[in-house]
Image (cartoon, rainbow, N blue to C red; front, side, top):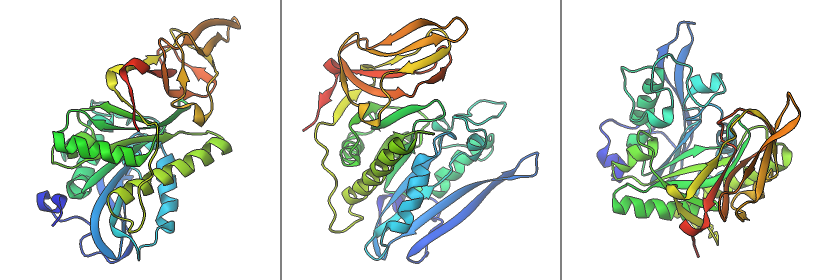
Length: 343
């Protein structure tokens, strides 16, 4: 019996499901409009027994790219060779997706699902959805990938992370899974109330992945399509789900603590001219003072601010040129003196 199966209080929704693709809508509650809020669960079961890898997509409603790519993968994976299963909530927060926003458009607190786990069956809709994800997915997995991407703000992302406050064995295994995930950046962090933190308390390792973004154009979209598929397959190989396949070994991954990251936010709103708009820019080394972008006041047409690297380091995220509000994340840089390049 797997660790997840031993600790689960209720049976997983996919119990006794045969080899292949299983889909279920889990109803939550009806809204004032009469529409039913539901949670979509997709499960791809292999012919051979093995671990269950859980994947949560669209915890933030403006981050659809991982879900779209995993949809393609479900038709590409040969279940005759698959060991175990891939269980995915394709839209974890449908309320936020409908608003194309990071958070749910609810009146009360706890509207960022990334901080709402394990949820509550008697809470607001966001908390109820989180509770349904916990009961129907997180309580039954052997490893978790909480999959994000850059959202509506036009950010470019290509990183993963682990909970630095997890129990030591869970922490070590999570780092191994992050190495297999293969992104150039690995961040040590902790988000109380997140899905990864929740499963870590149950002894389950996790990866918080963030790859791609929205409205990126054909070149960047193709780049991230390949990255998402490669990262997920490599993670599955590390878990022993794809017999005969080995995890990708990415040289030069950068491991860093949360305190190494500095975010650059403009003081005033305007039009951001970004000088780092390629997916390959993520992880790129820049020296202190490098100009990452400038903000133009569209009223006066004057450059009102330059965003520059605060120290020697690596680009954590960048964004496309476009409208930006004051205080909004523009860029982030990782302090090279506080980070470690892995073999």
